[in-house]
Length: 173
Image 1 (cartoon, rainbow, N blue to C red):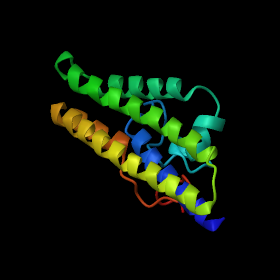
Image 2 (cartoon, rainbow, N blue to C red):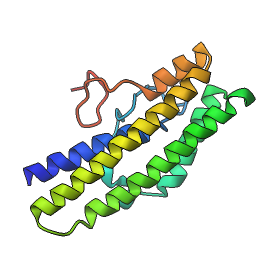
Image 3 (cartoon, rainbow, N blue to C red):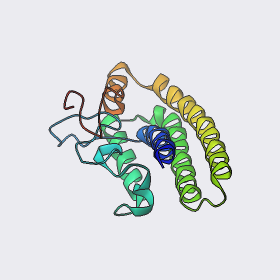
């Protein structure tokens, strides 16, 4: 059981890192939390429920992502010249979110004995690594198109994964 929790935890961290690229925080919020540093009780982004949020969370995950991307675009003040890089970035973020939903479904519906399920998880993690590499390339392309001011905003909003514990802000351990 402990190994299963570790595997699911690793999957959650990798998936949230991908989804974290689409993280944007409303300027009305008083505290700034980076990616995966939400103020809520869960381990997921913005204190959410982590990996299970897409299947058991409230609301439509695609709509939440659209809202986060829209807020990020507004905050970055993407110019018409930056639109192609922004569009490529958001297309990749949406593709990654779809892949994560598929991965969650596969993990929750896994059948077979323990070694077979572990093999399935290994294959899913390898697919996640490939997806993260593609997402990293899209992020680098977008970042290169941004002004230094926009880069600073993205750096702050995307956030570093500072030492956090169970979704708490850094230093609140």
